[in-house]
Image (cartoon, rainbow, N blue to C red; front, side, top):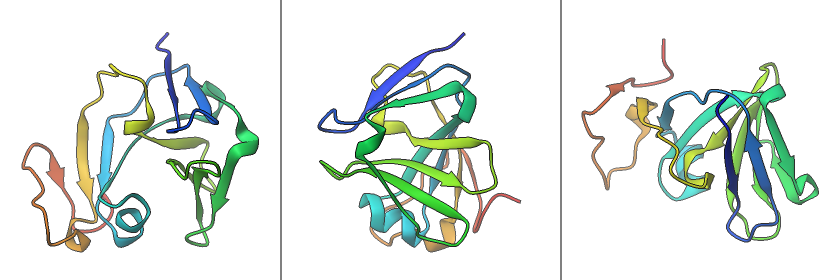
Length: 131
């Protein structure tokens, strides 16, 4: 069974995953860019294969009616994205201790990307969410 560990910048929030991680999805929408300062690059894992230590330090921001974005209330590190009706949590790939073996699977909301960078042609690209 795969096991991966990660944390926020200050270490107040630590997490472990106990299952197979999905390939990284790079989201270029304006919400993700505003939260992280660039695009959002996240994998995910089933909720029953995921544990958080220091969960009292996670603040959830409701950026939409359907999902929340979790970040460390101490250092501000963006960590998680959780849709209300799904049984998995997205975790920012950069929050994991390496090496992870993760690769980018595809890019979404490419039509909304910032004008200061190009999206590499290394993976599929979708103008909005993946169909």
